[in-house]
Length: 115
Image (cartoon, rainbow, N blue to C red):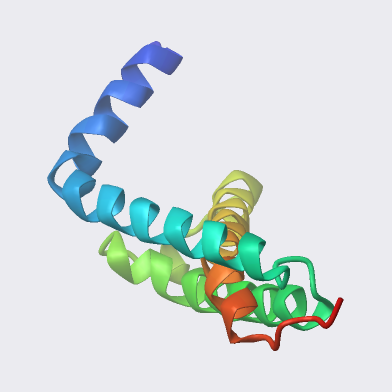
């Protein structure tokens, strides 16, 4: 069976289509938080970045352990390097996504810098 990037993206779109309203709402809220954090000048503070990276790391570890269960399999079903690398890549991707989504709210929790 031959796979194409178009076919894979079509299947992915069909899977996430029921979640699109929720994803759009999260994206709009995150953009609002991003604009507010940029106006306050707290987006690039080390505390906000450290908190976002920490939460992203936690999300990556949780994803690594729970992703097989979400696909109704287990770690015993992972047989080769490709399976493990796919799981690690997906977990890292989820961690990066979570870090980017939590960065603006974490920046809003920081104190405003005095100019």
